[in-house]
Each structure stands twice: as structure tokens, then as C-alpha cells.
Image 1 (cartoon, one colour):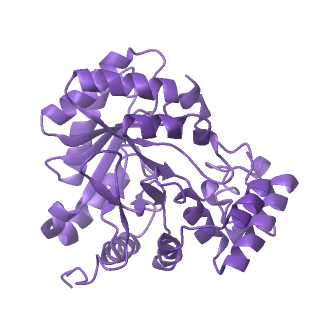
Image 2 (cartoon, helix red, strand yellow; image 1 turned 180 degrees about the horizontal axis):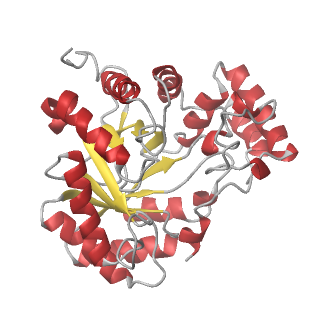
Amino acid sequence: MTYVAADDRYGRMPYRRCGRSGLKLPAISLGLWQNFGGDRPIETSRAILRRAFDRGITHFDLANNYGPPYGSAETNFGRLFAEDFRPYRDELVISSKAGYDMWPGPYGDWGSRKYLLASLDQSLGRMGLEYVDIFYSHRADPDTPLEETMGALATAVTSGRALYAGISSYSAERTREAAAILRELGVPLLIHQPSYSMLNRWIEEELLDTLGEEGIGCIAFSPLAQGLLTTKYLNGVPEDSRAARNGSLSREQITDQNLAHVRALNEIARRRGQTLAQMAISWTLRDERVTSALVGASSVAQLEENLAAAGKTSFTAEELAEIDRHAVEAGINIWAASSES
């Protein structure tokens, strides 16, 4: 059946300005890191994407190696874009990234100009797009001059293959340097995509201040701490969970101490009339410098639960103080090496 978007799709989603740019993003964006690869039914992906757009999610976030296998999330998205979303292209913000391993050899990883621009061309081909709205350097490369990596992002924009440039998991210092280089090239740094959650608060020390000063937007990924900030692990590690597969969350990270904090946070969420996942997303959005929270979804029902967080982002001082006692570093920031380099 031909997809027709809901007439009221902009009625319930708040939108936030991305830094000092003219672009607004939905408070909640949909990431296709998990659950949209070649190992999942395409009709499940279709249902999630349709419902997301019907509820005002205009931003779909991808990367070259999302899958599995690598590239399959973009391929699947490209099929669904062609079949369902092409008439709405000008209402969508579609992003992709390059920076992690994608193909064999010395030119399929990190931050060289050759890799980034070749990857972008491949991503455009997989998705059937003339351009992406945002193209990111997915991680900092300690061995490639920052001028080269930022130069590649600038070329992506000036050549028309991307509208905006972004970076992900960069330190505050490198973010300032990247912004300065891009300014010299006439291409503003639009956005930074860091990991951020109640159990991974590294951006609060310096990065958020830097983004505010530079006028750069912030889209927080993994606000649910790779699933730890849900009720899934309150009673152990389910066999079908991410931790059971030792993926981006491992069994070793499900410690008794971490679970004690998660259970306490769950109780605070219950008193707020939210699920733990909803409160975790709402909490990342409490700071106006955070433009959007980037969530994943394995089902329409899970998406709906996450979307309810957008309308309840205010906290009392007492709630924040109680959350702070349990919102502590949990050793789950597997992207730390990039932001430390």
C-alpha cells in the first residue's frame, strides 16, 4: 500500500535549533545503528520508519558500516526511501558518517580524505540520494592531520554531496580546533554527536561548554546506555539481549553496583510517571544545549515508548539531586579512546 504520511505529524514533536544554525532537529531522532541491517525483516524496518515520521521524527541517522553486514542499513534505508519517503525528501534530515572500518586495506578506515569522500560516494549510492543533510567524521583520527579530515568534510559540503558537516566523539579541544579549521574553509561545524547518558556523563566536564560557546549543536547517542537504562537488565541478562551477545554492552559491564544504580533510577522514573527508558531520554534533553536525543528501536512499540520522553524534559531540583546520586560513570563508554586522542 502506498505510504501517505500523517497529516498531524508535526503536532506533537518539539523541535530545537541546532546550535546557532538555521536548522532545527526533532527532540528525538531515530538512529539506524542497530535493528536495520540485513539480519532484520525489511517490513519491520518499514513500520518503524513510517511510524517515526508520522510522529514528527524528521531526522534519520546512519553510517557507512551500520548493519550487519556493513552497508546493509543504508541499503535497506535506500529501498524504503525510494518506496515510501522520496516525496518527503525536503522534510527529512538524513545523515551518514565515515571513520570506522568499512573495507579492507589502508583506505577503508579512519580519517583520510581518500576514505571519507569515497565512503560518502558509496553511501549516497546505497541510499539512492543526491546528497545527505549531514556528513560526519565518525571518530577522531590521531594519525591524520585534522586539517585533512576537516578539509574532506568541507569538500563534501562545497561539492553538494552534503549540506552540513559534523563530527562524532571528538574531545572538547579537538572540537574547537575542528570548528576553527572549518570556519577558515567557509563551512561551519554544525553538530557534534557524542555518547551521553546518565551512566556516561563525560560531555558535562568540558564538551558541552565548548559546544555552547562555539554555537555547535549536540545530538546525544546511546542515551539508554546501550540498553542498560531500560528494565531489560533489572533481573539479570536475558539471552536475547545485547549484553548476552557481548556487543556494545557486555556481561562484564552488568555489575551488581551498576544494577543497584539502575534499580534506584527506575524507582525515580516510576515516581515521575515514566519508564526508566523515558526518563533516561528526558534527562539527556534537560539541557538546552542538547539539540536531540538519538534513539534506536527494534519495534514500533519500543519507538512509541521512547517518543513519550519528548514531552517531559523538565525536572525538579529534588529529582535532579536524587538522580545525581545514582547517575554515575558505569564504565560503558566504549568510544572513549576517540574523545581522548
